[in-house]
Amino acid sequence: MAATICCRKGRGRREYRTKKTLSRITTFTNHEPLPLLCCPPVKHKRYTLHIQELTDQIRVINNQWIRGGCIAAAFFMAATLFVGAEEIGKVNLVPAPFDKAEHFVYFGIMAVLLCVGLGLRWLWVALLAVPLIGALDEWHQYYVPGRESSVYDWMADAAGAAVAVYAYWRARQP
Image 1: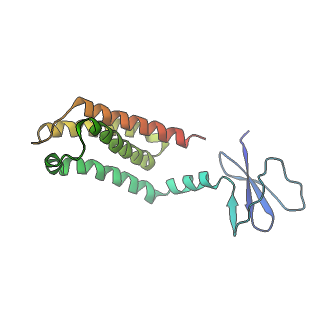
Image 2 (image 1 turned 30 degrees about the vertical axis):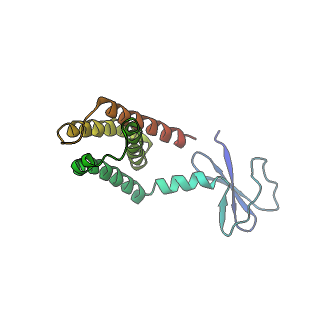
Image 3 (image 1 turned 120 degrees about the vertical axis):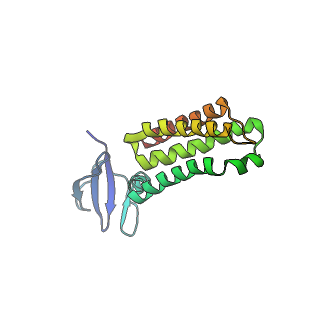
């Protein structure tokens, strides 16, 4: 049996929805007794769902424009690795021990963007694509003057992607 969530919908009417499908079960009025699973009412203009943060996240992430934008942002991040490689080699902003953290965060963000864009069913694509992009970046850096490639950089890329995908997966679990 799925957990029941209480919703408040104008003028004392309450709807009960299952957490899994958010489909309407029944509607109560102020004159009928309410089950114990109902949360206390919250005053709101039109409609208040007591776990509104969860449903808002689901609605926003399922919007195809948001998903497409996240995929486009991930591809843009990947493209900037290869297009501006020579200019980055001239200016080194991050010292040697902290560049691994930079790799970890950059590729972690790229993995999360791909996860949001592709959804939970396609997490494995982010787990494969982001480390592959990291490996191609390190291979490309080998041929760029002023840049050096390192297996440790690629390991930081892959670790950032794996941690980000796992964190996304855990955050999306009920």
